Amino acid sequence: MNGHAFKEHVDKAIALKPEDPSLHYMLGRWCYEVAMGHLVEAEKLKPEWKENLLYLAKKIKCSLTMMLREGDYSAAIKIIDRALSIPVISEDDNIIHGELESLEYKYQTYRTDD
Image (tube, rainbow, N blue to C red; front, side, top):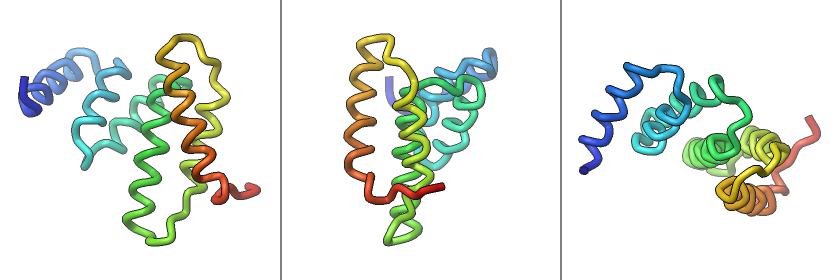
């Protein structure tokens, strides 16, 4: 299945199940331009989803890097901290937790006191 067919299938699935956070997550990963809107919607529907929070942090980091040469990573750090506070339940969570720890280590110098 090519990317456009995948997107069409996900769009149809979202029309049928607009409250399914995994569908919003998949579409967010596929379409960079609208990723933030769908990742935020998935976060509203399932706030404690570690994997979605990881991609929210990555998206914020990329956006800030592009917009502000120096980067203000405090929003990404807050999301990373929140995701790290969620218990690891599955092997997938364990892998994602490791990625989050790597991001936290890499961007810890951008941490603020707020």
